[in-house]
Length: 154
Figure 1 (cartoon, rainbow, N blue to C red):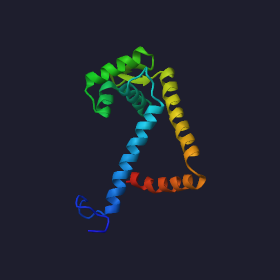
Figure 2: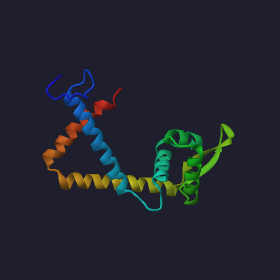
Figure 3: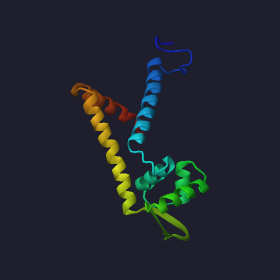
Figure 4: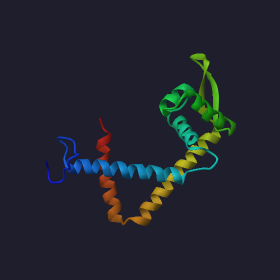
């Protein structure tokens, strides 16, 4: 066992790798939560924001596909989409491949809402990096991000 390994470290994984994995997961979770708070809007529930973002990211989709992507029951997604529809943020139109199904897309208002939320999160993050880190620390963050990018590569 290496000097940093603990009894609960999986076999063949160094203690430093296990610690980095735990710490990274915690930091990413906290950052995601903070970014959600920045763009949070009392008019939309977290599930509505999530569904709206999903439609923006993936384009036209059926309610069933959205439910699957979100890991929720179709009935729950139907309720979420009905609320977004009432607010004029989504549009439903017949699926050209199967007229029995409807495709959900964003309205112009929905696109503006998603873009505004994205801009608010990005601005908060840029300002926090500017205010809380030195130039050298920001360069270190960029170097770390380049390393972390390798985790996303197959």
